Length: 351
Image (cartoon, rainbow, N blue to C red; front, side, top):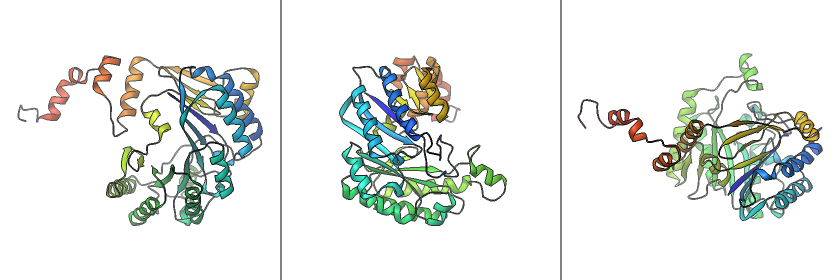
């Protein structure tokens, strides 16, 4: 089984904290859609014919800026190019202000069966502060509309660690989110990334930078509420009603193969990591000229071991030590016997 990621590099507005690749100009939108279709055809051999696609993820950017006609073209190419599993999970990232009832119905009709909605906050002042394009009323209504249309897999994103967000309001935010008809929550700490408007505003002393202690308090409150509500905390930043894991993101943490299509998209085949150029115009030029759109890093056995440890330890499942020994010859009991001994004892011989 493998996954497919499609990056849509456009947004109507630039969230001031975001360092993902996107463009607020739609000048190349038609060409990018054609480019995505072309790249799928050119790189379809990345997924072998005996491997089924079990997850398709439209990320960005903001995929909900696409029209249904554009989505249909992309889906048609995917189904012609790959063996798509009958129970494929098709996730579509979207903003609340794009999700009209009609659009939701159309998304469902073309095969989208999981929504990932970027709510971020229920506070209108904070949404304005972040330069989001929606308001709190739209946040709630779009989720209710999605459930009414028949989407039973809905995830929402929230951001914590915002300087002006009190722990009390954050708790209220989480509780309000869990009262909506959703079965998955992704929560991320606000970070100060280089070359973002947020960094510039902090340097100009117009905005306050994130406070790590506040973020830690928010995270602790989140875990407490999640446990009280009977949800699973299955990855550092991801939570769900029992068993409702994100199939696509879980594949990342379990080192499954995936192909990334579009500017800045990443791919992984178990032995190499590949990443596309993060520039729309350059991406299109490379496709037109027949030049590879990506760079590639071949992973050494040590690299693969380290990645397996790092990704596995992000999850509730951890890593299988017997598998590490079989695949990589990595035996923690032999390599770190003294460290393990001192962890279990006080290093004086007393248990």
